[in-house]
Structure formats: C-alpha cells, structure tokens
Amino acid sequence: MKESVGSLKAFFIFIGTLGVFGNYIAITQPQGNLNAINLISIILVTVFSIAYLYIGFSLRKLLVESPQIVTTLILANITLAVLNFLLSLFQGFQSSVFLGFVFGLLINWYLYSSVMRLSREEKSKRENS
Image 1 (cartoon, rainbow, N blue to C red):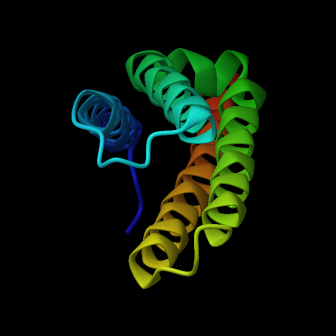
Image 2: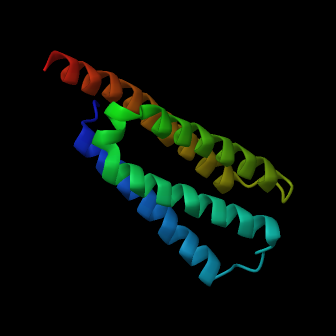
C-alpha cells in the first residue's frame, strides 16, 4: 500500500495519540512495577509520542524542508524501543513484550520508508513546478 501525505499524517497523529494515552494510563494506574527506570522510559516514550503528534501536524512542510528531522526521530524511536526491550529482558522474557517490540519496529520501519519515498516525491513535485 502506498501512503499519501495525508494518510501518513493521520498515521503519525494516531500513533502519537496512542502513545500519549497509553503512557498516561501507565502513570495513573501503575501495575506495581513502576520503578525509576520504568518512569524514565514512560517519560521518554511520551516525549517521542508528542514529537510524532508534531510531525503529524507538520508533515507536508517537514517532508520538503527537513525530512532528516523526521527520519532522525524515527531512528531514535527505534533505538529507544531496542533499549526498552533489552531492559525488559532483565525482568524475564515475556512474549507479549517481544510481540509489541517487533510490531513497533515494523511500524517504525514502515514510517521511515514511507517518509523517505514521500520526501523524494514532494521535492520532485516542487522542482517541476
């Protein structure tokens, strides 16, 4: 499926909203294992979720003027996901955490490749205008 700028914007906004909401629930209704590392992780994921919301609302402009901001953020989010997963292994392997990790990597890879493609397309449209 080929994403358009509009559908990718919606995707970033959805993922960002989901992340903010999910972390709000994690903070307000802790499951008993909320330690300093988990709290730092929640804060970092919330920051990335807010950044995804910003990208969602500014995507068309960012694709043309500074796509490296978007791609760098996606790569940093992948790095954070890897670190979170590795830290979670200290608490024991959980298949649900692993599946969430893999799913998150696939989503971020898809976003990265879509942003790269759309950035090239938007730049060529502006050059041909």
